[in-house]
Length: 240
Ligand code: GTP
Ligand code: MG
Image (cartoon, rainbow, N blue to C red; front, side, top):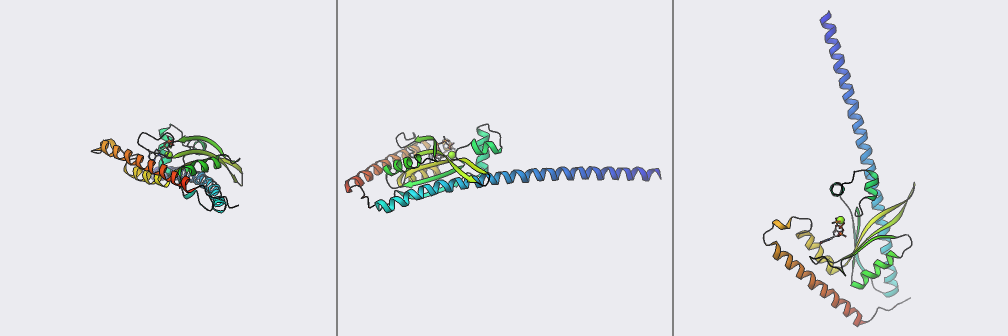
């Protein structure tokens, strides 16, 4: 009789432990769900910020196409940084992974790439965007005037735009890269071949770098000539 009581007691104890474990797992599950929801919400906010910036650029392009009968913007691409890349970059910067840091710690979670026809279009689009009174320019890197040693050319801006949500206005950061079709052609291939990869271990990497640099310079010269040809043809007429 006594033996049975002890066994019963042990079983009950096991039951309680099992219940405790279950409730701990449920708490973890709820916490995880909460985190996923917060993260999805932030990604939705960045997606909206991208749409705001894209609309601004599309409006400028449309106005130009009516006014001057030409499009300074050849195409626009955008992307949101992948969760794994966000995580790695925040770790690299020693940032704690939380809502506040994902919203303000990194500037390139939302990225918009604007491909222009001519070099002067890049500066015109950049300045027309910068002078809009709801756009705040936080940082500019002019890799066209100051190309990177590998030959990379592009005009980079970090802008802050307000996005209106049901709970109010949130300033969001967006990285805007503006470049010509030719610069984009070079950068896309160079990215595939080298950027963020461990090129030092590839045999003949020095020659590859030299060739890439030489291609970048040829492309820059072609861009300059195209700009000059445009000037020779004459400025595009204001049709308004
Ligand atoms: P990241 O940490 O790489 O984002 O650089 P950063 O914060 O110092 O900013 P930067 O303006 O220099 O570069 C931002 C982005 O420009 C990169 O993420 C790339 O998309 C592009 N970029 C910069 N340098 C190169 C380059 O040498 N080659 C190519 N293909 N792209 C580049
Ligand atoms: Mg980046």
